[in-house]
Each structure stands twice: as C-alpha cells, then as structure tokens.
Amino acid sequence: GQNIDQPTEMTATEGAIVQINCTYQTSGFNGLFWYQQHAGEAPTFLSYNVLDGLEEKGRFSSFLSRSKGYSYLLLKELQMKDSASYLCAVRDSNYQLIWGAGTKLIIKP
Amino acid sequence: IAGITQAPTSQILAAGRRMTLRCTQDMRHNAMYWYRQDLGLGLRLIHYSNTAGTTGKGEVPDGYSVSRANTDDFPLTLASAVPSQTSVYFCASSELAGGPGELFFGEGSRLTVL
Image (cartoon, rainbow over all chains, first blue to last red; front, side, top):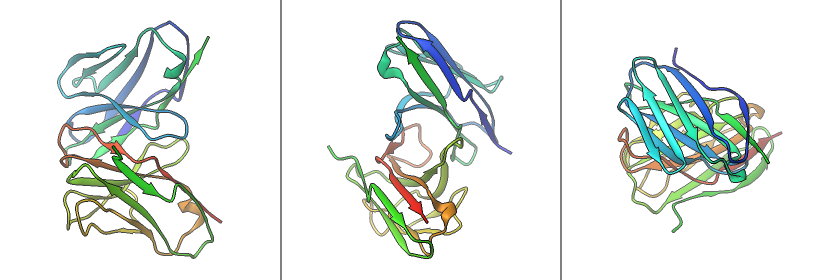
C-alpha cells in the first residue's frame, strides 16, 4: 500500500529552527508538496519538490531525496503565527496526491 | 479575488437525508477535487474531475456522487447521509490535473450527521 509518515506533533521555541520530516512509500513519484494548515482553516501551498535537493523560499526550505523516499520542511526564525499543521503529500504514478496525516507544530514563546 | 467558494460552511444533518455541498471556483481551473479530512488521518480524495464533463472516483467514493456540468461548479452529493460521513469536506482545484501546480482549497464545509 501507499504510505506517508510524518510525526504527529512537534514543539519548538519562537525564534528557533525546526525540521519536520516526511517519509513516503508510494507507487511511483511525480512530486512532493508541503502545505500549511492553521486550525479551522484550509490548507495553503508552501513548497513543491520534484528533483533531489533543497528548495528555499524565505524562512521556509524543503528538501527531497527520492532514493531515500524522504523529505523535510525546515522552518527558520520561528514565529508564533507558524503554529499550524504541516501536511506532506506525494503525487504517485497515477498523478493522484497521497497525503500524510500532518504534523501539528506548537510554537512556545 | 474569491478563488474557491464552498457552501454551506457548516451543517448538521439527520441520518438518511440527502445533502449537496456546493463548490464554485473563479480561476478557470481545469481540475477539481473533493476531499474529506478526519482527525488523525490525511486528506482523503472522494471524487475528482480532470476537466468539465468528466469525473472519477477517488480513494473513498462510496456514498458520494459528483457532477461537473461546467468549469466552475463541482457539487458533492450525499444521497443518504450516515454518521460515518461526519467530517470536514474540502473542495480544491488546480490549473491542470497532475501538473506541478499547487492545489487551491476552499474554506471547508463541516458536516455533522446525527
């Protein structure tokens, strides 16, 4: 079966750096997405990786290793507004998105 | 800029009743999707439409139906609601099906079936 694994919950301190990992086992690979979802709101797009390596976008970076079936989202200079769930999703060989259950990130002052 | 509009935002429904969740987008996106989100589970695809006039079944289609008569609208119907359909439902769209483009989500419809 297809599977996306992410930690259920993480806690970090305001101003610090946090890395959220995502491992996947899917039938084929056509890209990996990270979305942010604040409580009670819709998911919003953060990043897309299709080739190995690091994609940087401001305070957020996303890394992909296709050979290891692994990605991480790196958040720097954490702010209270970064408290949210972070969803990892992989597009499989049928171009369908398979979603992880999400990582709830709690930021403490 | 509206993006994707869902209605209703919240609804309590008696089991056995018929319910249609509405979804409209103004971005002229080809592909549209319906997901349900339950605590502890990832988003699960119910039905999708790659372009107007076509629909397909996702991971959890049973008990749901959709139609795509035009580009903008993609309603989801529960023919006879059951308590296990209590969930938050998200409609989403993307410019192309399967492309690198992101999905844009509506604000969600919280449905409770009693």
